[in-house]
Length: 407
Image 1 (cartoon, rainbow, N blue to C red):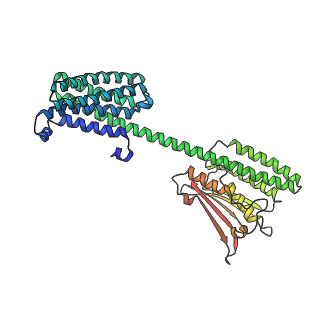
Image 2 (image 1 turned 30 degrees about the vertical axis):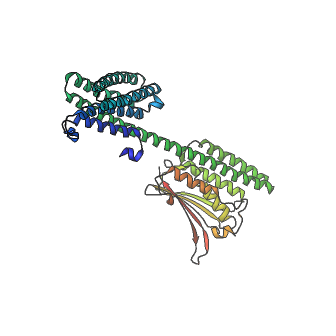
Image 3 (image 1 turned 90 degrees about the horizontal axis):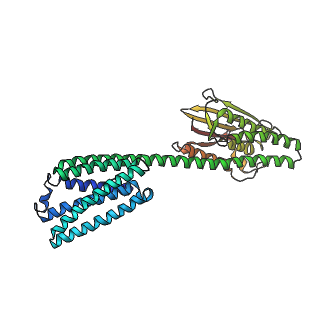
């Protein structure tokens, strides 16, 4: 079943090996020989041939299980020679059966037993010395049990020894396959995590330049208006902010208290840029411990940028406010960014001050970061943006809500 689902050949040859070994060891007790009319020449020939087939399946299983082509080139060459030799013996025994020269059949089987015994002993010794991982031990100990049982059967003429050895070998190989499967799953999980980490780093690498570009664009805007003192003050605060951001650039998350400091620094910069024409407030609910809760770096800044540039700046009057609230709800950290600006519909009709009308990439980057950082979380609940209206259905601002698992 596993082979059908995964196409893995080590499972295929393990299954064939177990099947052929079962047929060989159980043929007499289950009276399988009656299928071809009792103990006749075909039965004797088949009993000999299936031993060769068992060994063929065994070496093929070892080859794919240990991935000898990749990890054990010398053993892989030896296995190829064994497969060629065993295939030749099958052909030779077939010719002996057709020509009724049974002596050739017996000589071929005796050679096969000696040949496989030497190969098994040398192979086990090689794996004990040069084994690259624990997989080799499953092959060594499983083969040792079967080889001991087979030799005991050969010299003591008691099939039960081979049966016991075969059962132990099958069990050990089964444990070996399970162990390999689990190790591969662990490796896949590790690689997926590394891939997520690399993607997140790449997205953050895009977000930092995005943040820097907007800030430098603001400085350019102030210089263009000949407001050099403001530009100088802005540049000083910007450099301090960037220093704190760069110090955390290798961290996937930062403490909420540190992120709030960055948010307040950014809002101060935007206030300088726009003549302190708006107010802001940052609130942390009592249910959230800002000194222990962590948050992805720069996850809120793009929404604040949109609230100011698209909502507040084009609003008439002085009543301009953007509020940022952090709260928790059922193991989720929720950040709500709300402004009392002109709303998204009106904002689309007016070019934001100092900014282009291109769609903000910052929010897209935030969404992609959250999706990769929390792959098990419902991605449709990460970000929600709502247009606020009064009783007369007139726009009175915008509310953005960000949700993600709290850590």
